[in-house]
Length: 477
Image (tube, rainbow, N blue to C red; front, side):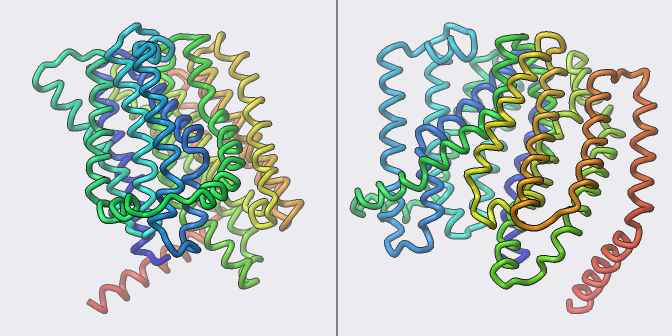
């Protein structure tokens, strides 16, 4: 995968984060905090819908794409049953009680909201499968645009609603999100029209479908455990605190998701690179050093984000003041997960993927226990602390297993550095206020200086490499 392709795939998460950062403050000023919480629940349930109704066939399509001679038949055989199941499920709920989804998820007995909710879920599944066609054809820009389109449309629609004076309530906000999904499906149908037409004409293969289920269902189960780990906090907050606390927490998580850009881009590069090294039996001695460099980079990011955490209070209403202190703990999930991509890759190399599911389940159970304990006492702060701790344990177990089953890693240094980051973030979330922020800021500044001094040789080398490449590029123009 060349640098142009990597940048093409990076455009999606980077652009989505940028539009999210623009739209969230706008929504926060005009919509109640509870509505932010409802939107996050909508998005969380939509991810669950892909896992359950998708039957793991989206993953099977990725797995079989390059070895399949008839890609149109492959798409039809793997996508038809999820489409039929999802449409049938939506129709059954509409005939039975269309307000039911709104009642149980939004705590509002509203038929319009229930219908919008169901349409949103349905379009999410279609977007997933249609966008995979672009992904597997390595149309990086087109694939990234499929990720960007809904975020951009949400920003445009919400801004339009505010400008023309439409009521800013739950229905208008959910309508904006659902309309953005429908328009994205329309764009994807246009982008993949030739492939979809070929799939419609192709035969459906029971043999292919069975093979896809055999591969996809176990993966879906494993991913379900991971979904529980990353999503249970929303439901515990809704049930044991309030939608307002969920809204505050969700705003912090949304800002923290900026770190997912780093994770998404890195994941695209790292796994294929390691598998190539394993295949060639080359550069494997570099992995230990890379894990330490990644640990240092994540530590530096924690310090940097902590120093600038008050910036969020400049762009959000006063009711979101606690986001400043929750933000750092919310960023532990994407940062620790990115580190685990490096330190835990050994489980994939030795093909012990069932252990990944076991680790997901263990971390999920720990997270649920911590949430059950902390959320009634601390609300959004408690949820952030529970999730941060659970993902540190997730990283620790996966790293230890990988180190024991594949390559020895400098585990002690990794654990000490990340534990210090975790303790500092938890302390800031629990004790943090505007009065003692400067104490934490001095600690983070000292950490940044220490990391810079420790890695000054590597930094100097990296800067020299970048400079030489820029000069080389300039001289060839």
